[in-house]
Image 1 (cartoon, rainbow, N blue to C red):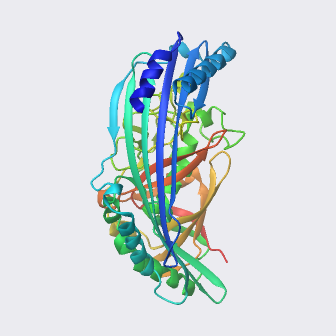
Image 2 (tube, rainbow, N blue to C red):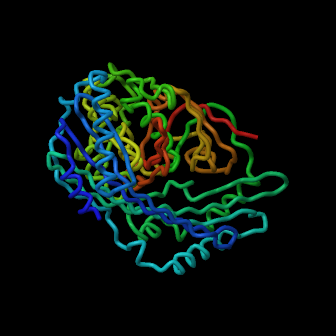
Image 3 (cartoon, helix red, strand yellow):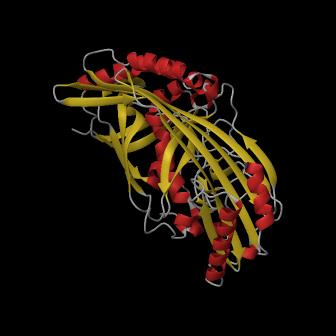
Amino acid sequence: MFSQIEQYFRELVPAVDFCSLRLVSERHESLTVRRDVVEPVQRSEDLGAMITVFDGGLGYAATPDLGRTGLQRAIQQAHDWARVTAGRGLVELTALEQEPRLGEYRSPVQQPWSSLPLADKLERLRRECARLKVDDAIIEWRAGLWHSGIETLYLTAAGGRIHQRFEMLLPSLSASAHRHGETQTRSFGRGAHYRQGGLEILKETGFYDAAPAIAQQALELLAAPNCPTGTLDLLLAPDQMILQIHESIGHPLELDRILGDERNYAGTSFVTPDMFGSYRYGSELLNVTFDPTHPEQIASYGYDDEGRAASRDYLIKEGILLRPLGGGISQMRSGLAGVANARGCGWNRPPIDRMANLNLEPGDATFQDLLSRVERGIYMETNCSWSIDDSRNKFQFGCEWARLIEHGALTTVVKNPNYRGISADFWRNLAGVGDRSTWQVLGVATCGKGEPNQAIRVGHAAPPCLFRQVAVFGGE
């Protein structure tokens, strides 16, 4: 089918400055066992194409009708919009670098999803789900797997052709405990163990070992004292660090947001164009890379959705802000060097500036080293709530589980842990970064942005990190 669509496109391309087709085929399957009962299997398929035309202006048109007539209609509509918008754009589109590229990308898969029968997958989930029910106080427990297979083909009139195949899996576990009017929930990273690959991900992420500890910690939280309130040193686990990176580094550095494009929906940014190259975003320990080349990470790819080759680039190095998350058009508008991060969530959405894999690079401290540096503090795992202002500056996060740190050692489990801060002040108080042995590859399943909305996958990898003098508080 892909070859037939490619033939139609080559035959129908109009005489314009630029024309591309981005074909997207998606298949999803979701399996859940809840309270030891198998829920209905959910499957979905989606297929369509986006046409982009530059001809004085810029035009898009998307269609699920992939026959010759449907593609011809979409090409004509995109061409019509390009003529309508001619002379009304912010940049001269002919100046955009549109070198045709040929390329392939494929997710690394050791054990394909299709290699295990459905009955066997459900049996594995039943087993893990049953291991969560360790006490009558566990009132809700579930285990799940969400698999996605995505294939894309990007073609340009000038001869560009990029074919990419992605396979990804998200395992999940959760247990909720209730006693005396109180409920506490503990989960397997709250959806953070999201990677590219096959069934080998279950072993790599520790899925088969996690259930008993998750259930036990949910019970521990019922009996735990409330998180103390005060200014404390804060040690964040990798599965909380990913939300901290996402909200207070990733979104503020999106160049279209900095330029004002998102203000009506997702807000602006405290970052301004003149900050790049000189602004101290954090302490010298803060090193953040944009890296779509990390094979098993959820948002890895060979090329973005405008055909630009992926590469690993520092956004922040030794605490200094270097470059934004901006695709071709945003780079032209701002005069700033960006990255290959133009991404659309599907065939019926145009690419916009998005995070892909945004990683906090490891430091040189073991976990025990980080603990030993704390006289009085708190350790938190697994995000459960977040709030941040519309300039991505002031924030507040809540976590599922925490333990006090006293004299360099983990002590009392506490419940309802929260912390708040201001992005720049918070990152400048970064005092310790875990080493490579503590670094975890994780991800976010749905990051929303754009009008109309686009929910997209984002990868984050991080070690545990230590922050000084953070406002911490509990919740009743």
